Amino acid sequence: MIRAVNLTKRFGPLLAVDRISFEVERGGVVGVLGPNGAGKTTTIRILTCFQPATSGSASIAGFDVINDSMEVRRRVGYLPESTPLYPEMRVREYLDFRGRLRAMSHADRRDAIRRVADRCWLGDFIDRPINQLSKGMKQRVGLADAIMHSPEVVILDEPTIGLDPRQIRETRNLIRELGEHHTILLCTHILPEVEQTCSRTIILAAGRIVASGSPQQLRDQLSAKARVVAEVQGPEEGEVKTSAAQIDGVQSVEVSSSNGWIRVAIQPKPDRDVREELFRLTTAKGWTLRELRREGATLEDFFIQVVAKQQGQQEGQPVLDTQGGDHA
Amino acid sequence: MHNIVTMARRELGAYFLSPIAYAVAAVFLFSTGLAFGLGTFRNGAESSLRPLFEFWVVMILVFVLPMLTMRLLSEEFRAGTIETLMTLPISEVEVVLGKFFGAFVFYLVLLATLLLYPILMSIYGPLDVQLLICNYLGLLLLGALYIAAGLFFSACTNHQIIAVLLSFALLALMTFAAEGLAQQVEGWPRAVLQHLSVRMHFANFVRGMLEVNHLVFFLTTCGAFLFLTVKRLEMRRWQ
Image (cartoon, rainbow over all chains, first blue to last red; front, side, top):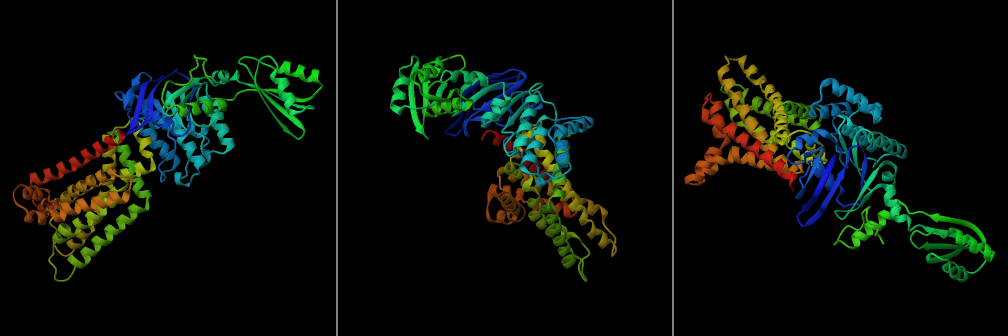
């Protein structure tokens, strides 16, 4: 549905997007994740025909963004980052204006406005001027505009910014629902958003793709790194540390004390789980054990790791991909 | 065509919803009214609208029309709405023409108010309808040129103030200064400056003369500014 091949965008000396290639299948929500300035918005602007790439090509539904720009624009609904709207218009007028420019008939526009007003909760302020709306309301107007013509592809740039927690949850549900019938590219730097809504994630940093895969796949790459954490009471820190380090499969041990309890954090060797051994150790020694758990890696850990790595080494190959297991 | 009408309707709607347009209309009505009341409509004055149309209205338009056109594109750039607009299936040409006609229709409303003066004059003497039509044709062409030039400068900057100042400068130069400057130089620069002198071309319409070359001047210059606006808009995408 969406296809990018070696996309590159330069702004003078600044390389905003550096040879990005990816492909998105029909249906589902694909998250584009990255720190600020990673090239997310630039990539999206190329896909929506707003800015041409310096080199490389992109197509949506088989239409090239340069040569068949109008066909692409007909098939895309786009919510830009700052949700630009015409402040003097009323919400209904605005949606009607946008529908006209999308060549929708009068009846289609009327039905579509009713439908999106319902889906994006515009009911209360559909006849109010846009300059009287709060940031969250404007955001919903922008979202309604992006989906009113039932586009094949919906591209959303930071759609939940400025919404209150309840609206954020509702918007994420809406995005998930939309993903059943449309292909959605969701650009964000909010990790839980990706974990909750996306079937696949592309992580950008410094203009390049540093990882891609489902949130689960990305987490799995780190799960080998999950730590085992225990809290024990009784002996001294040094004794705990040496005893724990002797367990088979332990790579490194950190201990710290607080309120008379010693916290042991064990980094096992890859694909090893040392919880049972640790439990046996505590019972054999007669220590009191009040907590024993495996600390799974989160997408956030993964994100911070790959982004930090990319920023540390601007040159060279992508740090990670889902096929390669070499992420040490 | 459909898109041009939609764009033009939106621009026209934006005028009637914004205080600037009312302020501009008020300035236009007040200043033309002043020129008519003090200059033309008094005892002993020649029963002619020529001074009003030939000088006063033109001068007022040089200042009023850039205020109408300044927001057309620069406002879209500043607010970022250009991004939502240019990702719709609409071409640069349609956007530019739509905005041009939106402003032009508002200008027609302003021009219609000027009809009050010939009506007042007709109470005191017969009205030369043919001359009036010729004057109005000239004003339509003049306004089209001014709006196209203002639209071009609006496409050049995100700042409405810069757009309006550049438009003032160019229009004042073309309208009032070109003739005088032409006297200072020789050879081809003189010919160019004389040809660009808007007042020289416009004067013929005020005198009731319809000549093709003056018609062509207005249409081509207006077209050239619209063409440059389209190119400017296309260029922005590559920056």
